[in-house]
Length: 72
Image (tube, rainbow, N blue to C red; front, top):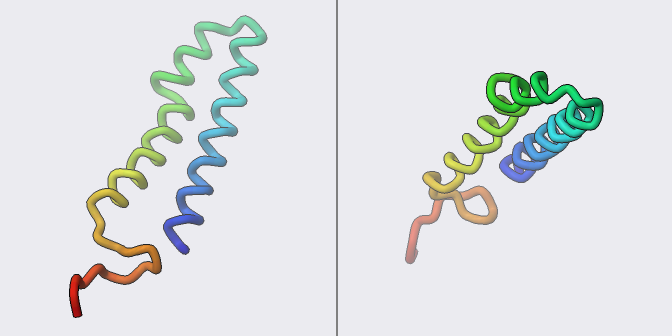
């Protein structure tokens, strides 16, 4: 359950950053938009989400948050 909350929080923050990017583009601030994507908040949010996904793919937690122990 903790993983699901962390993932959802990261997705929500990424979505908010995308909305900010959209606003920058809509206002014609392309230079600021590029900086926002390449060095700013959007990049940070993407890296946070990417870290969560990477950790989940290397961790052997099962659906209920317990270690997969194979056949018992």
